[in-house]
Image (tube, rainbow, N blue to C red; front, top):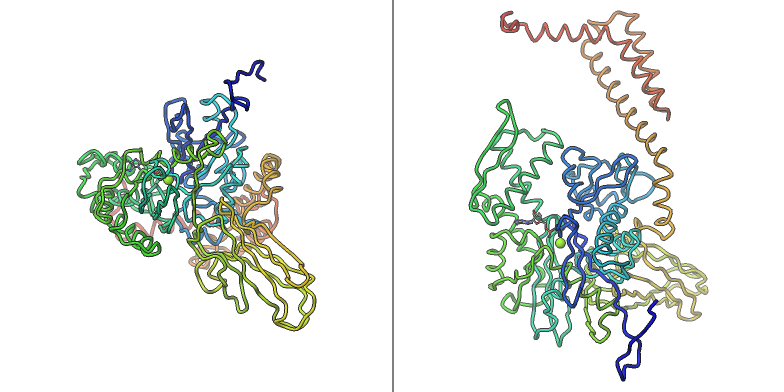
Length: 625
Ligand code: ADP
Ligand code: MG
């Protein structure tokens, strides 16, 4: 507590205490934390002077998770316990993840919840927990640098993150012990960083090409206020795809097969990325990779060949640009400023194509990796109350329409996409049966007509509707979206005023209680989880052994097996099948060993026989070297 407060004459209030606030860019590939110090917003480095924290978390048995560069370095050798690009999984259900593709190398546990869990040696973890590890790391960095506890943070999210994804991000912040003042759309943050809000009127395009995602947003600046007019993008387009293109090129050149294994692939991806980043400033690079009998392959990749490799990817970003302009109702020549965001906009071909498309030189003065965090820091500083006079109004939009399910599994949109938030809209519905006293409401998000093609957000019921003839009741359903883009829905029967409401917790989001118990649980169940893992592993092994045996016996069991030997194998196989159905991993292990013993003579004879077959037709000395 201050012992002495000095007030300027005429100053009525006590001196304002500066609150520590930070902006966090929680990226797919890299994350950053920034803060306003002495009036200047800048990103904060870690102890080694690094500003970018790779969004990679590595779990180890019985130890704290590693985050950042150390985890990234371990990715090659420990791919299954090293989680990268977790942002892609945020707020997603199992079905979505299958949709994202087979590229993800992690083992998913499809347990009771619709939320995917990632299997690691430290137990099963949810994407929210993985993100919380990243946030915790940045929190610590900020608190050490700023010398105190953070009062609040602003975390940025892609403009088209839906409800579930926003909620999951907020949950991760809370799990990390952060006071999340607000979620802010990344393009809006970038515009703020450039101080475009202080400028004149005009249309601004924010082109954000990161590691895993592409985002294009059209903003209109009007009397010092931003309006996000439209957003579009591609959740599966970014620098990673360029890395893959280069990796494929290396594989083709070096003759590496695509079943080379996960660690080889990850190593290749790292090499590819280094080559790509070097080509931003160099005209050509030499790629070297340990491979084959000679131990080394090396080749040269020129800027021109690289451009040819990635041109289709860069072109792919132009579709969403056109769509965003169309949605915003502006022509390309009305765009006055183009802001470049994301590490991949350093690639010369990207800058060229964007300048071509918008017929304007894009803004690149602020480091494209840092610009979002810087904008978030400026916003956090204001929200924390450090600039009480500075009123900044930021308008964001709803990325996907919000609506209700109506009869026949159809969607009725209540708030169309690209509506600026905060917003509230209502619509009246009625009963369809005589005497109907309850109505179930299903809140959905998406652009499609059929509910099945949209994302289900929540279901709730309105009860105690006074019985009336069908169509007589008037039920007003109101949708309200707050500044974070989070939705609450209220249904009210108009004659009697019966009410029911729900704050949307997406189906695979977490409840407050779940978040609290999650951390405790993960510790308490560490042992149990390990046993579950062992059981699964033994079960997989049992299946493999049984399948191989059956296949072998079907092909040559008749010729190579004695009658009583076959009987012994059958008994051992039946035992294994029985153990496999149980939950004791040790029993499965023993049964596998017993079966291997019973079939050892047979296996040996098979090997000899196949060697004989292989040698048939060859001269003996070919093999006797
Ligand atoms: P995200 O928003 O997805 O976290 P970033 O904005 O940090 O991503 O961008 C990461 C991507 O930028 C990576 O694919 C990385 O390889 C790429 N990148 C970073 N620096 C360069 C560079 N100098 N040249 C080309 N690409 C780069
Ligand atoms: Mg980014």
